[in-house]
Length: 369
Image (cartoon, rainbow, N blue to C red; front, side, top):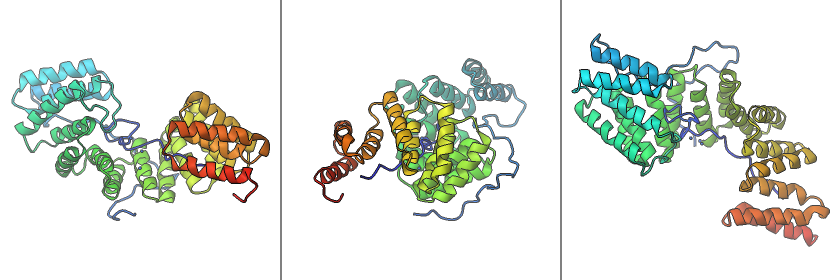
């Protein structure tokens, strides 16, 4: 019986960023055009600190409105939404005809929902829809104000309007060609609409503009992985891990990519590290089990699958992989069948379950699998 392939990396250019749709977006990732300037890959190469993901709203003057916008951006960047809202409101009162304050207030409104920054996570949400209306007003006030378009595109993506988000973000990124965040959000939107090649270009551009950002390398790694460029994905995830060694997702994604590149030994080490950082994540245990299974570590793999299922009994891939190990021993084939039947109840349409049940039937009849 064949175990299911390990899950794809958990970062998805939130479609993600596992960060926010600040196109450090984290959400999950045919070759792409080669117009991407890739960041340095050497493990020893020094990298600059990451850039802020908060788009600057001030125009560069020393006006009262711009001073308040700068204060709002700093507070927002630090996660202090109350101070950010007060500063943006001060800016609005000082310059009610400018789009920046409206963009800032809408930005805070979105952040206060606490929703994951994933595609369609705010579909139908009143606060998201209200923020989108305000961002449209801001974009109409000054059609050349790039941050309004980028934030509007982000809002449309959260609201589930992927096509509208892409069109808006193309305009915004075209105005902010050197802004990593604009390219990153556009990349996430392109991924949400199935344009993987274009997403790879945009997320590559974001990583090139902000080479010190772990999240941007993670996003690029994920879209590379999704496009079948596993070795390049491993390179990006290695940079991400170097920049964010305490991020369990980074180690998990690197481990998963290493599994796909058939480097199970390194994969086991990275997945162990992910679990050490976050033992409550079921997929980490399941993927570690898969890596151990590929190395013939039967007992250890079973223990990891069982740990994954204690954490998430609905994780069908763990049930399937557990069944593939149990089926090897005639004494535990009844347990293997039970595991596959459980996976079938979770997802009756999963073709992997059907294939493994057929192989189990062949094993029990003594026929070659």
